[in-house]
Amino acid sequence: MSTYAIGDVQGCYSALMKLLEKINFNPDHDTLWFTGDLVNRGDDSLAVLRYIKNLGDKHIAVLGNHDLHLLAVASGAKAVQPADTLNEILSAPDKAELIEWLCHRPILYIAAAFPYVLVHAGLAPMWTLSHARHFAHELEAALRSASRDVLFKQLYGNQPDLWSDKLTGIERLRCLVNYFTRMRFCDAKGRMNLTYKGTIAEKPQDLFPWFDVPNRKNAEAKIIFGHWAALGGETTTPNVYPLDTGCVWGNALTAMRLEDEMKFSVGCQ
Image (cartoon, rainbow, N blue to C red; front, side, top):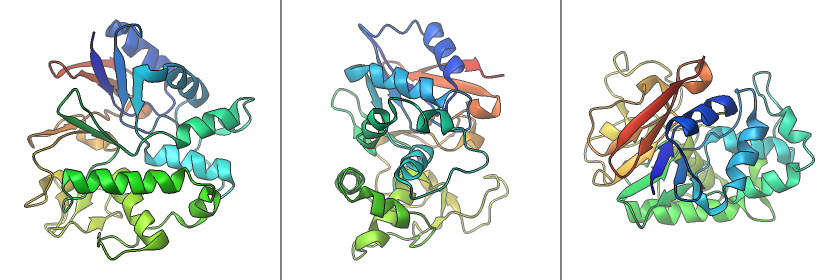
């Protein structure tokens, strides 16, 4: 009986099947965690969604920015982009069922059986784990509400880029979405920079990877995340576990067994 956390699949169904074969995944005994971005850019997002949904209680999958993009497109709030590979989902006979299932995936998962936290991009440096749990529940409730189609029309943008408890309405929700699903770099105060796309080595001096922001309040939590393929699944910072190894870019899909933190990868060529 094992639990495996898996990095961003992004519609790469064949690679996911190869990885599950490599780890000898048995849904009768094992459980899978997914770091989000289940869909888009890969060639079989529909098969990925159907497979993971059919795992029932043998999986946990948090929402990533590409998953939210699919929900926004399905609601009519956003248009399909040239690089998207979502049309098969949007025309599937079980589209409505899949979209509703996806809407009910968590933003953040805090395990009872393991000392790990699962999230797509990361946790805002100024949040304690208790704060993060509360804010995730707030965002989840909004995404599952009857007015979510209206919400998606206003959900996208880079501002506000710094959390404040005084934020309200759509600005509050947009800021939460960006911290949970889009964040990579922040300044020393935890202000997100969502425009710098370069490497850590070449970053401006005033920016830090979110997990290296000084005095980060959730540094004691063991955080499993995806989103940042350029990290290559590696960092020297304690208690952070990046698992996006760029499968959709032809690199690898990676799983980490939580019982011993052993990693397994398959190529995605």
